[in-house]
Image 1 (cartoon, rainbow, N blue to C red):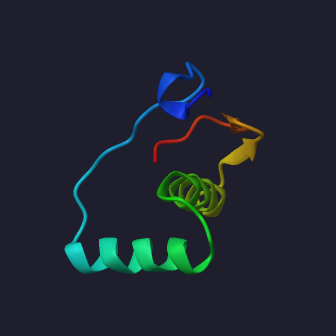
Image 2 (cartoon, rainbow, N blue to C red):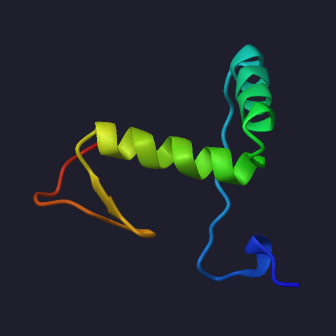
Length: 68
């Protein structure tokens, strides 16, 4: 069985966020039947779109380079 961990098209993202925010995120993912990777991918995609970055499939493009 192929996993995202071994898939060269995926990259691990890590960081430190407040514990309460982490618990809320985990709860929301569980309530929607998502694993954390799916929730994180959806959240990052939405944030990029709100920042004006066009997300196409699994690639990201912008009309003009911009600093985020």
